[in-house]
Length: 279
Image (cartoon, rainbow, N blue to C red; front, side):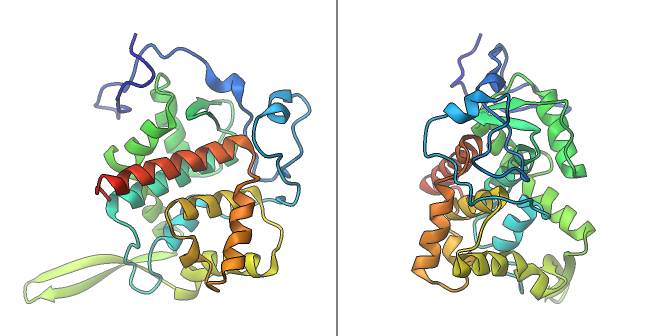
């Protein structure tokens, strides 16, 4: 049996399993975070959520999200006019991998506790891309560490998180492929927003929340936390108001434990990528 700290990678259809023998079921430690459940209201049969350590969840975070976390992260992490990424390739992939896992967490498909991931196969995601991620998680059911899945989905998978989210945005009519002639005989393609206003909507919406000190959904707070982890929060808060940014960061601190844990794992993964210069 290999230790939990050993370095592995999840398999794709043609590759080997990341880890074997990690038989402990970590699902009993955590409670799924439903995007439409007010923070601070625990499920009746889930006493462990109420007893979790850390700040008490704040009931001002409430409401349901009608948007997808990874899509908003992609748009915030790219220039709306040029499509240029604001982060390096590796860091962008890790951030969007966190966004895809976040979508599963918000749908109750996975749980997260102390860096460990548990699966709930009876729960069904609402999105085709999320279904694919769920299938990969279930196929490698011996791999429990969130950090390993961030690494795999963000950088090592045959189709990275960045590509998956971009393809979804293309299908939804948000992004389009644009060809540009760079040299006489060479043409390069890049992704660009179909509408600059639509591309800017996620950041404009967060800016409005920050300025009004408005209520936030759990998904809003997770989005804010992941943008802050990528050092993009000040960019996303268009007002540049330090008090507005401080308010948004205060919402991160009252996330429920599972969501806060995932945000912390994304922060650690991005920090490690930047420190090693592999962004």
